[in-house]
Picture 1 (cartoon, rainbow, N blue to C red):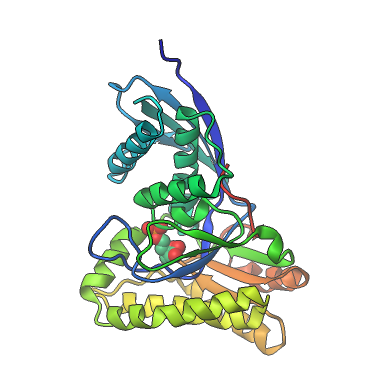
Picture 2: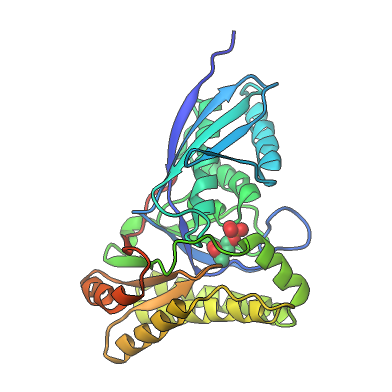
Amino acid sequence: MIHDRSYRARAHPSLALVKYWGKLPSGTNIPATTSVAVTLSGLETVTSTTTVDPDDPDRVFIDGVERHDDRFPLLFDRLRKWILERGGERRAYHVQSTNNFPTAAGLASSASGIAALVVSAARASLPRLDLTDPAVARELSALARIGSGSAARSIFGGFTRWRAGAESAEPIHPREWWPTLRIVVVPITADAKPISSRTAMNRTRSESPFYEAWVHDAKTIATEAEVAIDTRDLERLGRAMRLSYMRMFATMLGAAPPILFWLPGTIAVIHRLEELRTHGVPVWETIDAGPQVKVVTTEEHVAVLLDAVREYTAEPPFICTPGEAAR
Ligand code: PMV
């Protein structure tokens, strides 16, 4: 007789310092651009997955509400196939997930959510699975990618890279590499974003005349950011980050009709940070498919930063450090 088993996993969002934006036409969520990211502590998804009778439907509850997302069936099928290959039983899954931050508002809840789901389902099915084994982590990363591209990076802690054309992400430095680094998430609104990053990405690829240029140039920016991380050079990293997100948004502005995620507060914060930098405060922003601003700085500048953005925030900012791998 088979016993139902549960496993509770915890994962953190992956903030792209250099963006993944655009998928190759073949494969599932294979990136057209190399991204470089940091996994964030402070924001987290905690997910409990229970194995159930394989004839039951898979069910996913996020913050207590059942979700029927069309990416789940393929993700669960790939997970089951992988678990069978590793000697596990064929089971269905009941997933309960909670976030300590707003979902779907451009705070990368899909990255941490899918990473936690994959780890919890894998461990519930294979209790002896060694999550610290690099080969296992790589395979979990490839599985997480099926649910959400950025989740491939959330499997790992610290600083990560996900190469254009690759099925999985890879670690580049552990979280201890840059202990003074801080990532301050500035929520401009708590409302859900109007369109998903997946839709925006696909529309950009098919509609924007700037898309090819973006892909062509993205590699140089990723290399630049990696060198900046290798040498802990914040200004160099900040300049690469700004080029990456600005060009990503430029592709969206070229879609027909144009896609515009920014709100007035987003632009106000961009200008405010520019002003701080002219006064020698190293605060470098990046933005994902949403209006929220994420600012990279070091420990000693956080107080000045918080003071400067206070009037634009919808709720208190989150102060993050480089975070842990999904476990
Ligand atoms: O993981 P997805 O499919 O939601 O796409 C993530 C896209 C960005 O957050 C805008 C960039 C990135 O690299 O995380």
